[in-house]
Length: 432
Image 1 (spheres, one colour):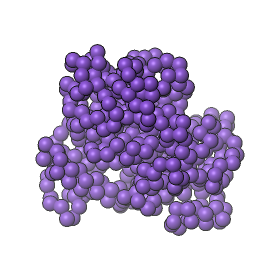
Image 2: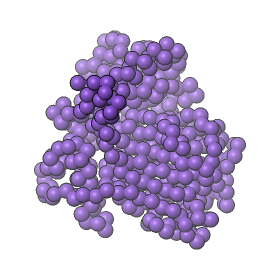
Image 3: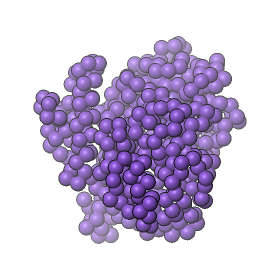
């Protein structure tokens, strides 16, 4: 018997290739990311030939992602044609075709390991699971399961290219990373948080997500502290007198830039440099969550403004995922920031009808962007885990009393979706 998630993926595998792969030929490359000084929001890492790229995955270490200007590490990129790109290694035009011995040797050299994989798809899966580095210091960080327990590998314009259920025996590194996340959360709780039991509430979220005994998430050298229940929704209205102290419903930290409330709305005052961010100093129960912001105004035409929500915001660094609309090009951008260094994960043409709600969602290693309730982006990225705070990201390249403006803010933990529906049951597919 297969569960509902497996059934949906199976249907996608049957029908999507017939439509998509019959229309487009994909050419796959391993290559360095490119530093674009003219990226919206200031300089950022982008895919090489970002004007035609169809898909990308970040395969860099965390220190490489945090480095500006200097090319370090690699990404996986797909194009509609063969391209000439710096230090590019061509993997062919089929994810399931056998790679040559020479290509596998180059992959071994670039990623400083020995792969058993012999196709591009198997290489990606092996690199992000068996060969991944829990710390992200020597190779990419590990692929993590969603709240439904799915290890998903998304590739834009392909949907999900591989998925399997989390298995603690098959995927031991997942529990290793969760133990390190718990260690970090516990240390931050005891040192900085007012609620000195927060780490036990975070532990409860881990036990609910994985349906495993809570002791499996506590490192051997830490005390065995039992979990505590907590469900969290964080909201901010910005309904207060105009001023430079954000509120009134939550405590905020202006991580970079100058922020204010004006006319009961959130305003990032001035920039003339990289995009800025502010953090809401309240914790969700876990790192699988979504964040919404009502975007009110981002200017018109070629004006350089944007504002959007940020999830998995680090409590002591400018590290987060964000999704925002940008009028100069009419695009939506799904982006990550690692200690102040941005990487553009996906860009899609949008039609705006402001004010409307923009949402960024972090679910395991599946990162999504939504416009007015409609999913616009779904990407795999493994860089940021274990962060339970949220906030906002904005760019104002004009300064003064101009956009960007945001309003009602909401952040909430994700809950596992129902495992079955009456429709699927009637079809006899079965439930998990």
